[in-house]
Length: 318
Image 1 (spheres, rainbow, N blue to C red):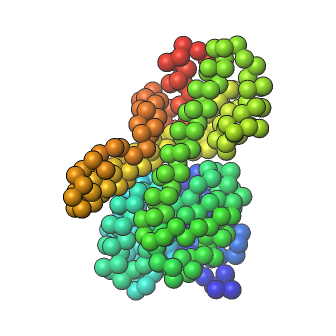
Image 2: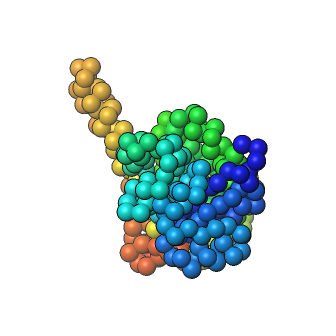
Image 3: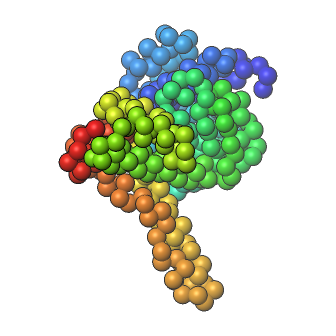
């Protein structure tokens, strides 16, 4: 696939992340056809980057060797791939679909099976890194699916990401992604609480953050979110409502794994005790914090806005 200009790529979904990812494909020399629910957004993107605007997801498929979707949830992925005038309606046999949204492992496997029945290939390849890394093409991409499909998609992944990992079979990319996002948001909530305790204790917060960053309490989320939280700047890098969706997907997937452990234990005569303990116990309190923030109208803000809930609970403002 040396001739990137001859590799026709479709891209569906030009939101905060998708618009930047598709732009990196164009910069890497790929021919790109785009479709977005808001036609004006697709036309504006094409004027800036030089791609073609397709009339429908089916038209994207007709013009493409591979189609990437980057939308909000599993329902939207299913709609654009399998719905009326969707990708499957315009696809030839063997078309590779790569979903880079975050929809959870179960949905990825279900959609992949439906596409396979129609002679199409499918990979789940969610990303992490938020909009700055989408902008400069340094996302982390975790892909699930067959190795041959991964190799076929690798040039596309490498145009959009810096760390590209084949996570395993279909659905494993999604599982890695929702675990990663859950760890990230729990980390952010703990960092917010640390700042609030420091504030209540009268600490120099500059000193606290400096020590945390230089010591064992340091993390990517501390580096990325500490200053925005201190200044209450919730400029959106990753929407709070999307993080809430992802952490709920993780809870559902962890519950399915836990139930599977219980069934396995029962099958070998050990009762259900081995599967009774919940997985990722720190997830639920953070889910409640995010849900509270979403109910307060902060869903469109960056997920660092979870601080607002913690400030109210603590009776302290940074």
